[in-house]
Amino acid sequence: SQYPAPAMTFRIPWRLLIPPGSVDTVIGTDGGLSLAQKSGAKVTVSTSEEAPVTLSDKIVKIEGSVGEQEEVLGHIVAELFEFQGTLEDEAGLCVFVMPTSAVGAVIGAKGSKISEIMSESGAEIDVGRECIIGMPDNPVVLRGRPRQIVRAAVLCNAVLQDLADKGRVQADDFFYIPGRAATATRSRGASSGSLSFARFLVEKDFAGFLIGKGGDKIKRLRDQTGATLQFRGPAEEVTLILGQDQRVLDIRGSADERNEAIRACFVEMDAASMSTTRLLLPLACPEVPLQEAAKAAGASIEMLDDIASPESSERVVLLGGDSSIRMAAVLALVTKADAYSSNAPVTANANQAKTNQTNQT
Image (cartoon, rainbow, N blue to C red):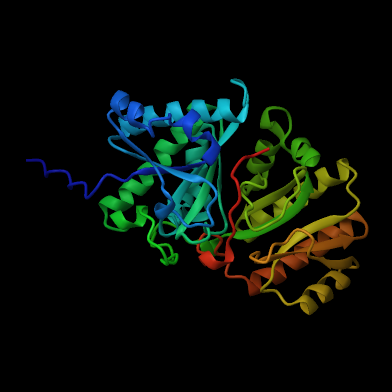
């Protein structure tokens, strides 16, 4: 005889952020009542007591079966895209809220799970490196066309549901409780320490150049190096004061994969005639060892603080010199940073984060 399937402990709610000015358009003037009646799901919008005062956006919570949640999310994403002025054939974004204790499982060992979800859904996924201030949650940005975003949301939340069924996240992990801090990831399937990082500050035009037509170039670089390469804008980089034309090139993988991706990106930087390099490094790295490592490679180095907010855990390092010299300096600096950094981008303390309006431009 077959053993009965384990009972589901609770059905996790799906949570996403929308601008406060979009609520009537996206959710409806009745606060989601019509959506609920049509789909069978329960749709609620956070009140002032249900979110930290520092959060400028509203938290939309969708409760129900997966089918009901999926139907409601499809409507919300379509209306949100229209509100943001995103055309039907363009990629837009939607920001979800995920317990910090669960994001490691969504990322997976060496990024395996998140890569699988991106491949199956066709959406790009950026997991925020910092918690939403005042909440033990991380922002997770899904970027793509509506159907891609909905599919990615289904897959991401399936991982959370599995954690809930195994007792590794609890019902109160999905509710705002004032004063509660983030906890370390409880996922057994991910090891954030296995990941190495390199983060560059670049211009929006270079981001388009590196992505290539239809994303062909960046996909080729991912396949070639084995690393994950993603561009992140002001909506994702909540602790950096990025200009509208600035992006962060975020490279993740094993140390070898990261270093190979750095070399490949410098080839593209040369092609784009970039004469300097701006590298983001953890504040945990003392300045003197960084200066010594850069000078040993023959590069000039300058510490900048023009885009870092008081909550930022990173500094900008400006490197000068020939391309080969700057590349050698970057490789030396990220290796030096590995020794000082915990390499745990998903377990940041909430007090180190800052939120802003999550509209991508």
